[in-house]
Image 1 (tube, one colour):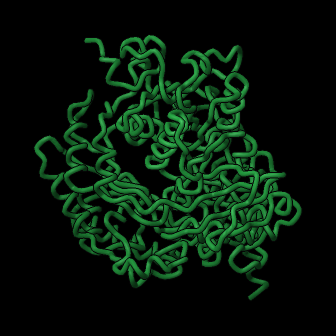
Image 2 (image 1 turned 30 degrees about the horizontal axis):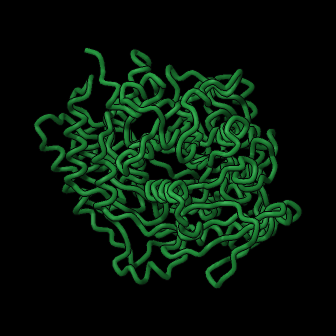
Length: 592
C-alpha cells in the first residue's frame, strides 16, 4: 500500500500539485532529513504553521553545491524562507573534540556524512540571498539559538559575531519557536495586506539587526562585538549578563553593537502552559520519516521512534550543556492524557513490539517540577535550581511522574517502558529510585557524574562525587534486594576548564577501584554560548572573574584523555598512562 503523501508536509513540486497548490507561504530548509515526529524541530515548526492556516513546504538537506536547484525548485514563498541547521549545531555534528571529521551523521539516511555544509545556517542563507535577494529569511534551531550573540567558535578558534550578521537573516528565533514563527508569519501577512505590522520588539524570543539601538530601562547594552574581540574579559562579563537574562522568567532586551549596526535580542516568551504544549503534540504528526526515505535507516529516528518526551526545559544548569540556554530553565510538562495519547499512536507504528525506549525529557526526573512560590522564581537569577544546593522553593514531588510510570506499565500493549534519558541522581526520592531501578532500567543505567574533583565539579555545576557514590550504593542495594543484575555506567569528561592532570589521575584511580574500563570517553568540546566554553576561551570564570586553568593544546587534551585508558593492553598507551599517573602521584606526595 502506497503511503499518502498528502499526510506529510510537501517536499517537492509534485507534492504541491497533489494538494492543488501553485505556491506556498513558507519554505523551510533543514540540515536534517525530514522525519515527521515531534522530536524534530523542523517538523514541529512546519506543523505549527500549517495548523495556523499557512501553506508550508519543507526541503530537507538541500544540495548546496552545483546549481542550487534544491533552493529554487519551489519558487518564491509568499511570506518568507525559514532555515535551520537541524537538531544539532552543524560543527558539533561534523567534528570531534579533536577537530577530526566525523564519519557519520545520525540525522541523515543510512548515517551518511557530508549532506549538510559546515556552518549550515549561514551557507543556506547565503545561497537564498543570492537567488532571492528580496525575500525575508527567518533562522532558528539550536545552531542559530546558541549563536545569537557574539560567541566563541571552537572550530575556527575565533570569536564570531551574532549569526545574524554573517547570515544576513531578517529574524532569528531562539529556543523553541512555535509562538514566534506564527507571530512572524502574521507580521509578514500584515505587510502583504498593506497594514502596519507590529513593532519588531513586541515579538518575544526573537532577535534582529537594527540600524539604531533601542533605548529604555528594559534594555541592557552589552559591549560591542569588536570590544569583545579585543578584550576577553569583556566577553566573560557579557556572558554572565546573557546567561542571567536567559534564565529569568521576566528578562530584558539585550543589545550588542556589531559593526555599524545593533543586534537586538527581545525578552523570552512567558513559559508555555501544559495545554499549549499538549496542543503541539496533538498535531497530525505521522511519527515516521517521509516516504522518500523508504527502506533507508535514519539512526536518530531509530533512537527515538518508540520514545516519549514528557516535558521541556531543565533547571540543572550544567555549565557545559546547551539545554537550559536553549529550552529555558522553567519546566513545562505535558498532561498525562497527552502522553498516553502519543503512546496509543506509537503502538500502531511498523515494528512495534511493546517496548518504549524512553519515558523521559531533557532530564527524565524533572517532570512537573517547578517553584512552589512562583513570585520567588520571578525574582530569581540563579542559573541552577540544584547547585550549589537544591533550592528550598523547588517542588520535588515525584507523585505525578510515578503515576505516569505505573499507568503506562498497566497498558495491555506495553511489555516494558524504559527511561533512556539522563537522570539527575541529586534529584531523587527513595520511592522514585526503587520504581526506576526495578521497572525502567534496560539492564544498564547511564548516569553522568562527569568527574571526581570537587573543584572541577563546582565549575561544571554538578553534584559532588560523594553524591554519586551514595547513589551507586543505593542502586546496587536495590538490585540485590530485587534479585537483579543491572549495571550502572558512569560517564566522565576530560579537559573541562579547571581540570588538571592531577585531577585526571585521581579520576583514573577511582575508575580502577570501581573496575570500570571506559571504551568511549568524552573530551570536552566547547560549544557556542555555554559557561564552560566561555571559561575555555577566556581563561576566566565569568561569575568571579578569577583565572581558570584550561587544557587548551591538542597535546594537553590528549594527555588528559590517556588517563582513562590505564587498562589498555597496548604497551605504549599503558606505559604512557602509567608514567603520567606516577608523575602526578609523586607530585601529590611531595605536596603533602
